[in-house]
Length: 281
Image (cartoon, rainbow, N blue to C red; front, side, top):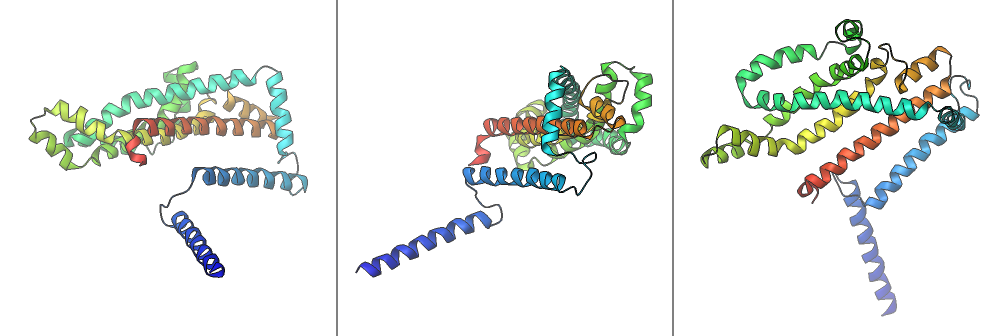
């Protein structure tokens, strides 16, 4: 009986492994949280490991590709000089301000564009046209219109995010099923109640995802914004380091922007999971 029982146990184990493997590799399959984090860890190790090897082998001159150790040393010296924290905070302030102003205008306007065809006809074509205008080209105009203070830098970030954001939010609004709107109308809800309690609430998970994506674009426009007569900020530090070929400092600025952007992205994901838990079951 013992060999037969052992064979059954082996078959059961193989079947379990096959089920796990199939669950992982099927389209939109499941992945255990610990396995997911392990894969993330391996990808970062491979990225930095490849960078270190390329740098140490001298594939590229160290002036153009400093090693991760050189970048960490530059970060430490930048921090000890007392400018790193100030540059980081001022850049976060500019990005957050430009992004929040964009969101405050884009959410209500996108709600009306996605809900009413006359509003769509009035705004959408001109916004579609405006979104193809390069934000960089507005830099000299912003200097004239807004000035060289913080308002000019925030305006550049606003220009870079607003037009894309409003179009994406109006699309989120249009994806709300008509059956939900008709159900509200059948129950005698007013137009304001349908907008607020049916359409906006139904589209809110997608809108939060849109805000998360456009926040990343706000960070990409930071360097452009800090070309506007800036004397502080991560983007300004990157541009200044470029003049003196301080590539290690450029890497520090780029990596810091990436880390802060990733942290904000994860904050949005956390809020999304807490606000809409039924989407994760």
